Amino acid sequence: MTLKKAGLLTILASGATSCLIYLGSKVRHGKRHLLRSLKALRPVSDQVRQVRRDTETGDYVLTLAKDRDFRILQLTDLHIAGSWFTHLADRRAVQAVSRLAHQTKPDFIIITGDLTYATLQSLNTNNLGAMRAVRRMMRKLHIPWAFTYGNHDVDTLTTAGYRKLDSSFRRTDGVLHRPPIPGVSGFGNQVIQVRNADGSLNTALVLMDSHSYIWNGLNREYDKIRDSQVDWYEKKIRDLSSREGRTIPSLMFLHIPPAIYREGWDRYMSGDPGVSHHFGKRRESICCPEHDGKLWESIQSLGSTRGIFCGHDHLNDFSITCDGVRLTYGRSIDYLAYSPHHHSEYRGGTLISLKSDGSFSVFPVPLPRRSVGLGERFR
Image 1: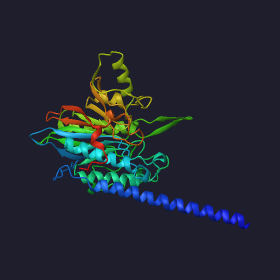
Image 2 (image 1 turned 90 degrees about the horizontal axis):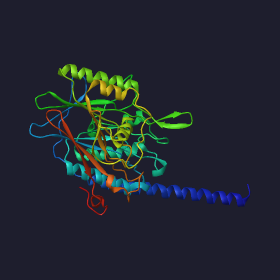
Image 3 (image 1 turned 180 degrees about the vertical axis):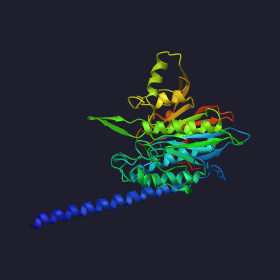
Image 4 (image 1 turned 90 degrees about the vertical axis):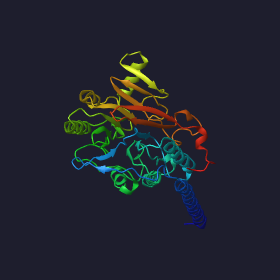
């Protein structure tokens, strides 16, 4: 090797080392900013709501107070990445979650997927670290919570797969999460019981893994709820209904909307009297599976599930009733995949209020643009 080549290689190696050191310092800088934001969070309540387990089913159980409705705050598509490149967007997302929680003071929070966004776009593939930040944020709020996975929580180049990510959750995080069910496709499938003060079952909250993608030849399509999940759902509903002596009411939560969302919206736009509109708009395409498999047929047959709540399509926030089932897009948080400077009207949360008789109401919770200014002190 000539001295000239050796010198060039030395310069390149030195430059690469300097770049790595610089990037490393930026990563630490970004993490420090995010950690400061998380430390500044204040609990919504000084008392953590008591959660117990059903000794027969193992389901988590939450209880309504006698004097008021049970409030569930649905959040979706937080897209927290945890990298130096995204620390401003991450701080905005953290503040938005805190504002919504303090504004609505929910009894329970359900995040319907894409909690994290560790992708090449965010210059970070460490989804385990990003999820650690989400766990810390939720722990600081002192509100029991649960979640479903989205298609970005485990992405093409993320360092942790579903099993490793799933095993990272601890009871101290305040999260109601169960390990994979043998023979049932996916992670995070579970039923959470909401019971009245007298012990009767008010509503079963069904959380489902909507998976990610499937390949159809050279084309990538969105996956659907698998048959094994539908079979599990049917058995859970029938078993609980048998115990209660009636068909129990239930609500379903998942990330990717079932195909009935697209069909229902098309029917509404064509004037179908079987579909009614409550609020919100379709601002972008409904990205869903080509068909629902057995899911919608099962929902109609059982007559238990009265509402479905999803995320995924950030600009959509409509809520319609189709053939007796309320179909609602949750308002999203994301400041990464979509520009933080546009489309601010879709950001926020969705509040679900359960009555003692099992009926429910749904309210969109807008996030005012002024409430996410980074110059404001975090609550």
